[in-house]
Length: 330
Image 1 (cartoon, rainbow, N blue to C red):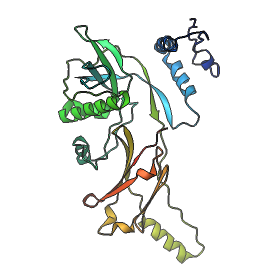
Image 2 (cartoon, rainbow, N blue to C red; image 1 turned 90 degrees about the vertical axis):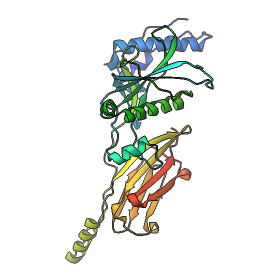
Image 3 (cartoon, one colour; image 1 turned 180 degrees about the vertical axis):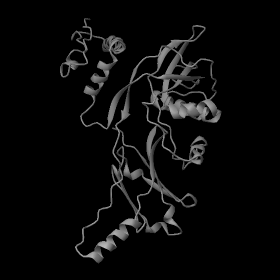
């Protein structure tokens, strides 16, 4: 098998892909070819991370909703657990999870302390969620040279700071990381955690992660028709001032190997009105909400959803409407 060294220059454009790797067409081992490719790719990324960021962007489909970003994780703490006996691969193997942080990772939504506690207690109507970026699993050895698995779980610095002073929140973040590892890597992990007195296992390296692009405001203004008569204009202005754009939060949840989009709309002016006065229209990637004379909301969803799975629940004591639907895989 023959291959050429990657020649990557961040100043190059369309020639960047053509210089990746030339493999012998007669090779009989695709797995070996892929291994050589990944080793070379990793080495080149370490030498020139800026060029690799440009390469990743070039590989991304046009008009993608996500972007490739270069991140160097900042060490936080390490959670230690192990795979279970029922795990088909890596049975009873120790796994070390590097909980690290970076301001490049999206921060969680701004919510009340009550909402955060609801998420920590896994309550059904909780809307708070911490964005977490997971690395691939990599093999390593522990301090007594036994084989183990290592994985990075990156969060924003704000939730990390809370883990320092709130042990319950630290366990919540650890549980989020464990659940995501199980979903992404098809493993079963023990819930018996310990926290070794190290802040990172392995060598800290730059990583390319996929993050959603920043979006403009998703709330549309309510259109009003210009009027020629003074009395009509006054009426339109009065109606517009009464109708509000409700506060809302969009989060994701992962359960039973499915990803869900959750939209929570705060409607404190709902009062004692019947829910039958609410108009809710859910489309593939759009949501329209209307409470006549009080609220109007028209938003584009960050991902497409399966509208046949959409359910809505009005929590009257909280004056909150929660909509949940399965996210369509892209």
